[in-house]
Image (cartoon, helix red, strand yellow):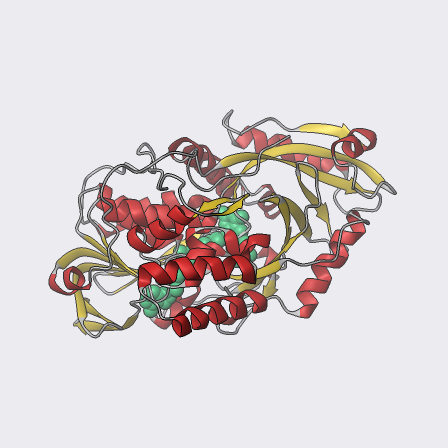
Length: 488
Ligand SMILES: Cc1cc2nc3c(=O)[nH]c(=O)nc-3n(C[C@H](O)[C@H](O)[C@H](O)COP(=O)(O)OP(=O)(O)OC[C@H]3O[C@@H](n4cnc5c(N)ncnc54)[C@H](O)[C@@H]3O)c2cc1C
């Protein structure tokens, strides 16, 4: 049976050196940087790491916690995106397949192969032969670097693999491979490595305005009350990008996932929903992720959440293909896709990225996929012309950051210990209980994100942070409220 994906290290690892991930406001205020990256999602993190590896003086500022935007709310796949073949996005799929292979190579502890069944039922718009043809092309685009080769299965073989599947009308399936990750952890590790390479990365320090002189930006004002000076400014604020760059036009869509009790035996499963879209269930820390919706969203990105209609849609699709699946929802989360404006329906909107330059030294980067972040980051750094140094992110391993397990144990799946909480506080700039539960560890998106475990984690954090009992209670209340509303 396939093992669930672990976001960190084999037990026993220690980074073995003093970490440089510090909230150094003094350095931020008193250095003239080559590059200021605005936004601590995966694109900002990737740009900071790429630029630091090329020897540039880099700063990164994030308005809330690192990875708190879309980059902790994805499906958590590092994938070629076979469904984009339907839209003719062959170039994007080929690039994603290439990046999938690179990310597996540089971060094998985070990016793990996962098998999927694309199941086909009587009356589906996409017949089995078409899926087989599509996945043949998908494997071919990976040029021999796919995590495994696809294979067609009869209905009986499909049921033998996943006995909980609805048998009535089942025509068969195609087995194929992609990769799974923990998106928040992957982003934090990119920030951590950038910091180790000398980048000044600061969370809870949003940019409130840009100081311009002629067609140049000379500084960015930050919430901490000072200006950060740099030669180039990169707007990597995802779905918030239009707030800093007037020429950026987005058409965001919301995607909801539910964490539910384990549904499948070992595979991820895709199927065609009643409305023709694709929905899926994926193994996740001994439970399952069901997703996702894809609907236009014009509200505040930070307030995006699973509405009752989203939950009903996903649960009813789940029960259509897994009739005995429980209707319990352990928790949910919603992310907003920073898609470029277009006239297409939400799920057909382009996943390509775009660089938008305003003036001499201000560049916005929007769109793209988590999977392609590394290549996009390299393109951004090169677009500034700040250095001729070669990109090194395709060959430089992403270090493994995790302390040796020690102290009280909070959960075995995922494997989280008191030492992880301490490490998050002391070495990874976690400032709140939610930072630890949701983004330094994956506890919040599992059963172990409940009030009992959260209270134990809050008590330990309280000791390190010097929180009073009422501060601890306030942290717990904020965490549990956000988890219940699906806005963590
Ligand atoms: C539901 C869903 C599922 C997805 N699934 C996948 C998948 O499985 N695989 C895949 O490859 N891709 C997937 N994606 C796409 C992927 O998640 C995104 O492309 C990626 O996370 C975007 O990263 P980002 O850094 O551009 O944005 P974000 O992660 O949103 O980062 C932007 C950051 O900027 C910060 N910010 C905003 N304004 C300011 C300011 N003024 N000052 C400082 N900081 C600021 C925000 O707080 C935020 O943290 C999915 C997306 C969604 C929504």
